[in-house]
Length: 187
View 1 (cartoon, rainbow, N blue to C red):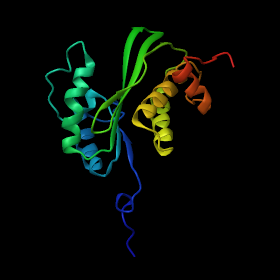
View 2: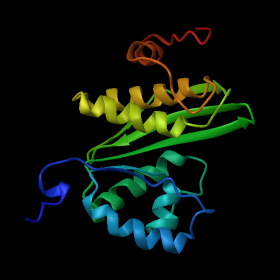
View 3: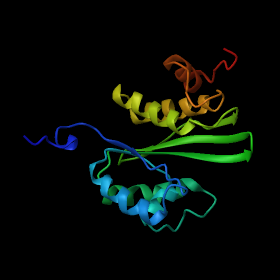
């Protein structure tokens, strides 16, 4: 017998755009990604994904206030694709070893913005995965959009301070960072 596709039996699907130009062209990525998106519940994407891969136009994305860009594009993306959430991170490079980092989560009604972290980078590899897994963990725990964005962003912020591509921390480490501004990197 034919099995039902996962989206028809209520399984949530997340998708991280994570475009890599060395793997395929924007045109190839656009064609293939657009075929996947009708089945996605949670999208992890940035404004350049919306513009370069999905073809949305923007009046504000090249201004200094990047939040205006997301305020403009999130509703446009949700009008075309029926996502439950869109999550993005914003990284401002201060130097090669210092970034200012925050996260955004759009739930179709409002944009929830995390605390902003000034990060001394030890290893950036895996920080996007830490953001994604932090989001998915707190989402699956039934947390609010505000908690989700704080948890995901704090998870990624901490990952920047850990060698290797795995975020070897626990839930209380993440919560201590966004609730108490406390994290001990010397462990």
